[in-house]
Each structure stands twice: as structure tokens, then as C-alpha cells.
Image (cartoon, rainbow, N blue to C red; front, side):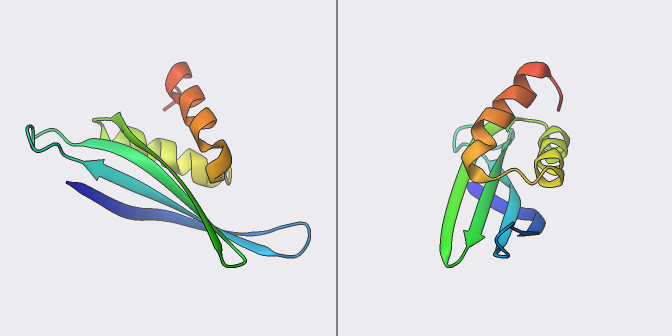
Length: 97
């Protein structure tokens, strides 16, 4: 079963005066075989002029606090879906969560 919870939202004014909205969500997945151990992930959704772009990484950690801390960093640095995978990989590799 999968649940998604919106944690943060940014409205970013671009250089050409357009407005972009970025939503940062926590995902929680529990497998049918082991419903006691949820795994948490992150999802970023970008809204720009009627188009929607989304990127999601599931199963980053079993620690909810760790993933929330990482999502907060993504939010503070206005990370977009296109660069999310590389940045999350770097955070996990460096242990900066």
C-alpha cells in the first residue's frame, strides 16, 4: 500500500516572470508481506504553465525522520524533478541525510 503526504510547497518566480510551483511529498510504502516495516521515499511535482512534471524515489529509508530531513533540504534548495535523482543519490552516498 502506498501513501503520499505533502510536506512543503514553493512558489518560485522565474527570471522571465513566470511562476513555478514545486510540491515536496513524503511517500510511504508497506509491502503486503511485511506490513510492519514501511519504507519512505520522496516525490517532487513541478507545475508550470499548465504542465506537470513529477519525479519519485521510493524506498529511500525505513527512517521517516531521515527522509523528512532530506525532503526539507530539497525544498530549501528548490530542487526540481529533473535533478532530484542525482541529488538524492549524492545525499545518500555522502550520508548527509
